[in-house]
Image (tube, rainbow, N blue to C red; front, side, top):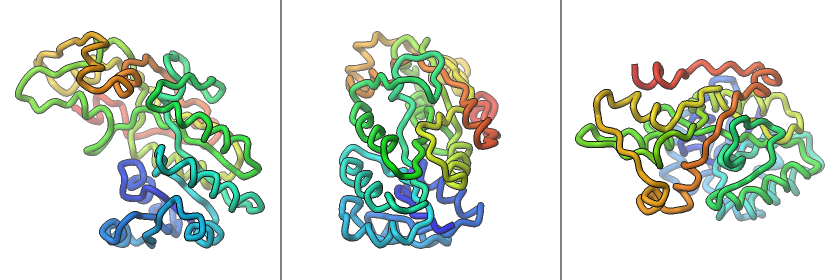
Amino acid sequence: MKVFLTGATGYIGSAVLRALLANGHAVTAAVRSEEKAALVRETGAKAVVVDLTDRAALAPLLRQAEGVIHTASAQDVDPSFVPNVLNELVHSPTQFVHTSGIWLFGDNSSITEESEPDAPEIVSWRVPIDRQVINSNVNTAIIAPAVVYGGQGGVTQLLAGDGSGPVSLVGDGRQRWTLVHVDDLAELYVRVLEKGAAVGYVIAASGENPTVREIASSGHGTVELVEETPDASRERLGAPFADALLQDQAATGQYARDAYGWTPTSGDWLKAEHS
């Protein structure tokens, strides 16, 4: 399949690029600079330097694609990029796989595809964009990744510390973060793209739902873990970011397993990252 991919040099997008190529797809990646284009070309994919808000430049790239995956989802890009994609693909069978996120669903101990958004401030901008995607006449799917880990990226790195002193938790650390390994997530993007149906949200969660304290302690042995008040976390991290991290969330990702035959293989967090 000819796939147009955004975010191909990012944390999630680079994993998606690897998975697409491994599954035999021909990828054209949109990047912001020749430096990033060179990185993409080293993988064997094509690269084009383009502004994602430039409709005229994007139109021929989208028309040539048999599938579009958008992992460069951002507040300064999506209000222009997403409507342009939907307009270009409205009379096409091309599948559009958009990216949202698990934080969108707020404090929720059983997040599923039927859950209503209850977004904290930092991701509230996503709600109207996602609605545009869901209500369009295009074959669309919205992947909502859980907290992503693996490699050198992801929010869990906040709890990694440097081994030289105490590690600050977010709040008291009793809230759960629902997790997914970046490589498992990338495989799900490929499966959703290949199925090509309009499905709404797909919750990309491995079923691991450890507390923040469990995540932090798994990598530090006897290192001291320091609880914070919510206000102290907001002061340290900024209120919008901290409020998202203070949410208690859990999910199983069962729909992704049932509908796409997705079987996460890279986690258990405790064993995969810290054994």
